[in-house]
Structures are given as C-alpha cells and as structure tokens.
Image 1 (cartoon, protein in one colour):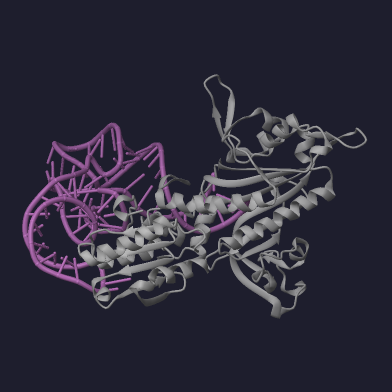
Image 2 (tube, chains in turn green, yellow; image 1 turned 120 degrees about the vertical axis):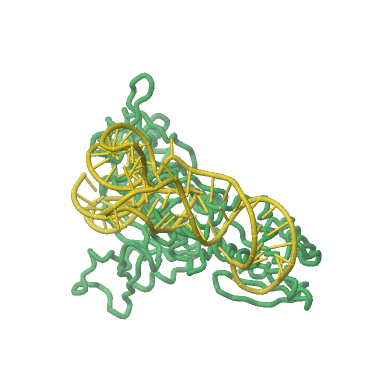
Length: 431
RNA sequence: CGGGGAGUAGCGCAGCCUGGUAGCGCACCUGGUUUGGGACCAGGGGGUCGAAGGUUCGAAUCCUUUCUCCCCGACCA
C-alpha cells in the first residue's frame, strides 16, 4: 500500500472524549471513529488489525477442531423466552420491534440460537462431541460504555459452544479450549493469565477468565510467576489451572497458597472467558441426544468467548509508548513501513520503490510512505501507527550508501548498507 | 441508574461573569522558500456558537426545556 493512496487520517491531538491511552491512540492513528456512545466505525487501519486478530483466533480454533458457522446479529425473542433469559437479561438487551410487531433483539450472545441449531440436527451420541463457533458482532446496551473499543456497546466476539455426552467429556472440551486460548493470546504477543472465575448470569459450575498483562489494566492480578513464562508448545491445562491466580478482591495475603517469592502482582485486562454450564440450556431448549442405551439425555455444554474488538484496545494498552503504538508483528496492520523522507529526490524515490516492490512481490504487508510532507510529520506519524519494522530512506544517508532501520517494539535504530536492507529486514521478520 | 463535567471551524481551545452579531493554535487551499524530527513567509477558505423556546432594540453570552458526549461509582467479552 502506498500511503498517498491510502486512507489514514492521523491526528496530532486526540478528541477530548478519549481518556485512556488505547482509545486516544486508536483515534489519533485513524483506526476508528466514534459513531455514538460505545459504537465505532472501523477505519482501514483499525480494520486491518481487527482482521489480523480475528485470523489468529480463527486459526487456533480450527486447529483444535472447532467448526465455524455464522449466526445472525438480530434474533427473535421466542428462544430467549424459552430459556428464561428474555426477562433476566434486562435493559442490557437491545430490543427491537419489526414491522409486524414481532419482538426481536440484537444478540448479546448466542447460547439460545446455537442450542436450537444443535437440537434440530443432532440426535445421537455418535455425533458428539461437537464444538461450533462464530465470530460475530454483539450488542450489549451497557449502562456506561467506556474505554473506547474495550468496553463498547457493539463489539466483535468469537464465541463457541461445545456439546458433549457427559461432564467428563465436557471437561475435555473445556480443557481443549483452555489450551487454545493460551496459545491464541501468546501468538498475539501477549501474556495471558488464566483465573478461575465466577460464572455470573451465564450460569454453570466451572469457569475461567483470561486476562492479559498491561500496565494500564483495570484489574490487579495476583498470580504464580510460572504463568508468565509458558511454552505454547507444551501446555497442560490441568497444570495451569492448578497455579494460583486471583484478582485483588479475591486475594488474601494471609491464606495465599504460594510462597511470596513466587507471587507476582500486575495489572490485567480481561479478553476471554470460558464456561462449562452443564445442561442448563440443553434442558430448557430440548437439546437431547440418545445415548447407547436409547435414553434421551440433555447434552453438556460449554461456551467460550474472546473479545476480538476489545483485544485491539488491549494490545495497545500492553504495547505503546509516549509516541504511539508498538504493534506486535503478528497483529500489525503492516509489518514493514518504507519511509521515504525525500520523495522529490530521484535516488530516494527509486530506492524506496525498489524495496516496496520487493516486499509486495513477497507478500509482506508493507506500506510506502511517499507523502510529500515534512520529515518530522512523516516520522512521527509512523511512530504513531506503530509499524514494527521501519526502513527510513533519506538523502543524507543514501549518499553514503546507508539506510536507517528501526524496530519499533525494541526501540532499535540501526544504519545498514543499502544492499543488506532486504536480507536484514527478512531476518527480523522471521524472529 | 446515582454523582460530576462538557457541547463555539476537521482537532485542541478562548470568548460567556459584565449582551452589541465570533477568535486563537493545529489541520486545510494557493504561491514561494525549505528538507534527518510535527519547518518558514505571504495570501485564502471554512462556524445556523448542540437543539427548541423565552427575555431584549439586539443573545455564543441571561432564563427555561431538551438532546448528545465524557468522567467517577455499581455491572461486564
């Protein structure tokens, strides 16, 4: 992508409505524009990141055998009446009446719909286990939306639902998801901390929430330091679940089960939540299968959510400095930025294009900053949008056969010979 | 939903107390000079002052109503 052809409206000052750093940076870097309280348009740069996160989530789900489908945003109220949640959900649920006076709603979650889909097609224990998911926009009419996309009313969520014959099998599905979640967040460059959680209105008996570490996080976490150094290739859910982790109001110094030297305290942001809730919905919505003996039994279910749009904000909370965003490479909108400081200079233009064409051909996400504007603006815009690897081409260095290479995350600036730029960048991309 | 704050140009703000028909910085447009950190000079465009009603010869400014947005709290992916 050439910057001059792109739509990337950066701002020097954030609008006064933005308070926390990720919200400010998302607005300043032209990722989102607020439409109304808790509802945002995703501008091209923001959408790219959202899609990258979505892709990682999808890949990790598919790897463990979850099957993607897509359910609607607008649902009819009748299934919710059956499950008993039409009244329970209260004002958080956005209710809509269609032209014939039917009561509809913008789905805040999808247990009812998925259970209905399941029950109408699955009748035998032989079809189990099943794990279905979708990535869809949800709406919860929060009393007080805030923190930009981290607590919007409209948000993109990956939610899946597992169906098993009994509790023991359901726990296996649960653990599989648990593991997939840890891997998903690690792939995004984050440090996930899993905590045993309250089940809340979704109900059930077993639940974990996943927080990621960020200095500016909302909750304070107390946890075993082993949770900080996980090897994604070698995750044992049961072992992880046995490690100590608690949010501040559950933590008690006096009966903390682990020694003080192993206890870490950090701020976190919740980005995922998983539940096992047994037969709560399957009984109400008649999701029964026949077991080996021909008995109709309700399936055991779990549900698993990842806040995809929230992750965009959360990652920024975890990775930024006073100049802007520092994207982890895996989710960055572009991996490489080629910054031509002097687009009017023939040599600079030629060199920039040469690199640009190379990366385009090699399918590396690359942006060429070919704008005619001051150097300061160019460099600060690129710092703001936080592309991990920046190749800076200017007349001064080029005369000496040099180019400046920057790693935004590691704060590394380095002069490199022009001929080595491509190899050097590729080497960095592999890390 | 309780408490607090704010709506004036795309963004950040001043003006309001003490009414006289709107201003600054950035951004934008034109021309020129610049070129390794948001550059400079000159010229220029853009606002029914959130909305409605009222007071007044006259309202951004005073009064009333209303809408929106933000912050703190209780609640959540």
